[in-house]
Image (cartoon, helix red, strand yellow):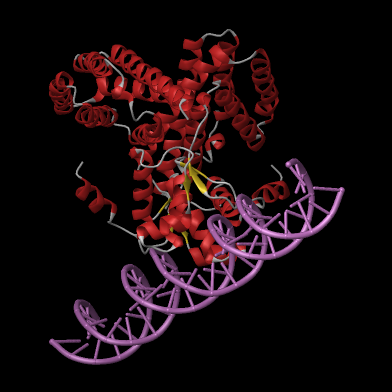
Length: 227
Length: 227
DNA sequence: TGCATTGCATCTGTATACAGAATGTGTTCA
DNA sequence: TGAACACATTCTGTATACAGATGCAATGCA
């Protein structure tokens, strides 16, 4: 997304809402890394507001798990143990698997067609090795699967979990061969959804997240090692 | 839980944390009903604090979905459509089914034994028709299943979803025959978990939540009708 | 009588003020 | 030289102040 457009979105609503979006964006895009301090005064100066909306925003981000707080200490971007990271990936695999299964059963004809189109369009990006563009298509592809399940609460859970995982899987498409493998796995999911094969869709989605998980956890390990 | 003990728990930590627990408690126990206004000033007076911690608490409860806010309006206890309620129950069924499956695979010998004991202890309450005591045991039973999955993030998701559903299934054990049926369904889950039969445990848990769902949605309908 | 409008009371949203906790530094003493 | 203590600085947590938005009621007009 264009930077100007992003800033425009961030600017709507109350100041607190703006701060929630702005800080969440810093975390999800990786501008601030897990463990980094989110100083209230610095944040307030940075966005030219008082501490009050910054504090409320940090509280809300804490409630959804993006930041951690201890009394009388600065908030920090949530950092998790390898074990907890693994549990988030496992949960994500279960959730995506549910979405794929329900999508296979419930998607409308239009939704299935759009999913297929989105998927086909990304093929070109794989051959070009366009990592960032593919990443955007990838996000869109998964979002379609989440919506296709036709279950608002599952959508919320899976979206929230994805946001919390984002800081830990930023570089996934940089690993060699990851782009093609992702595409092939998407292909398995799409084919299963198109023929309304819930069981296969479910298995394919679970397997897909498992590969992402392996790649990211390996990456997290090496990042730790270089610190 | 004793009232004094509950108040003691609520009183620890920062004022904001106290307010989060206190207000969440009002909502989850049903002292405040879906749709009711959570006036900042009234809350502040009620708990003898300033508006600041109340506001922060409401923001956090909003972030996890227990209250709803619109700019320049009072926060209200989250009220959902029948459709959204159904989606929450379906999500809950999926999550409990995951927990049951993973519990069947992963619980330690001790965890399995404790689950069985907890379950057996509740048999007496069924015969006595002790709804409130059974309800407490029921909560404990399910919590054991959530923990048994040995996955921190799944535990978080299922606990959070349970809290959000709480306002809408308060009276479930008042319906005739519900106590016995709940016990029998627990029995199926326990037996499957004890013999490490993941598939059966999963199915039994899904079915169990489905009956709760049916009962609660029927109840919600009639509650709406009597308004 | 019915409807629009104005004014007031109430509440939210943000900024600021102030007290207390945590942290880091410099000094003192062994 | 090293450790410990006191002080100063910085930041958080809560209260308060104030401006703007909302809603309601009373009034005026058709």
